[in-house]
Length: 297
Ligand code: MN
Image 1 (cartoon, helix red, strand yellow):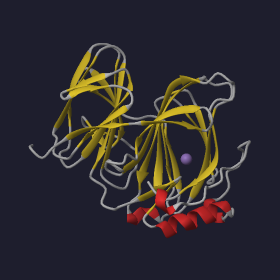
Image 2 (cartoon, helix red, strand yellow; image 1 turned 90 degrees about the horizontal axis):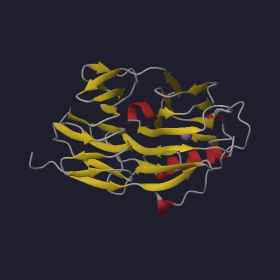
Image 3 (cartoon, helix red, strand yellow; image 1 turned 90 degrees about the vertical axis):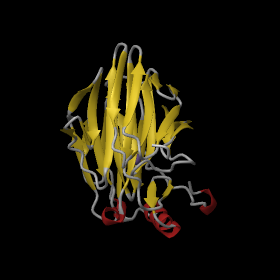
Image 4 (cartoon, helix red, strand yellow; image 1 turned 120 degrees about the vertical axis):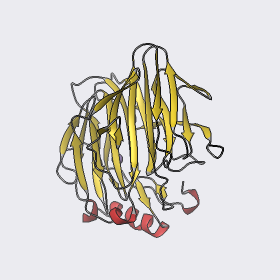
């Protein structure tokens, strides 16, 4: 176990779609990916009371799956495959871009003003990143009890429960929730690296506290994670086999070369059929900014 390590990574604050305040944990300069997880935004919990809520106009993706875990509020997803799907608390949307897709996201008019969700991206391996786009809504995820916590199995398996969410590389994700004093020893796969983020409340880990604004990274080799909390608390724990390929992540694209990013940018801004058309969204599509090669993250 000597080679295992635990690191605390600071998150960055940002705003998505004019109204939604987020904490961005991935990509991080020290860890661009955790398994195939390559992007992690935690939005809320917050109240958007202007009656319009969150609105993100049509925009493209390539080379990744977007994974949305909804905790509070409702969001309407529309995509270029013709899907229009409301996602509610306890549900997951998985949109796999493959070679290209576009979508919009907006709060449901007249719905709850509360917003609390996590949106993650999963980098696709070479075998899947040029494939057809697809969208899947998962209305229910399996739950299990992990000591004092209720666990929702988002991706992979935990406590013998298997998530139906279809992914292309060995991957893991659970949401741990408790409302009172709680503790648990979570079994880990030593082949995986992991990231833990507090979505509500605060936690005590063996090496110190974990509150808002930080992500704890665990290298491969760990077999357990011990967590403790007091009062209402929610932890997102993600993991996976370290991703084999070096990826380039820029704007809404995941690729392997700058030429691929430039082509995707040109295709989207030219209205190419590659990304289809999102029907029914009342507002402008987003414009891809010019690619600045020195600022790839
Ligand atoms: Mn998107």
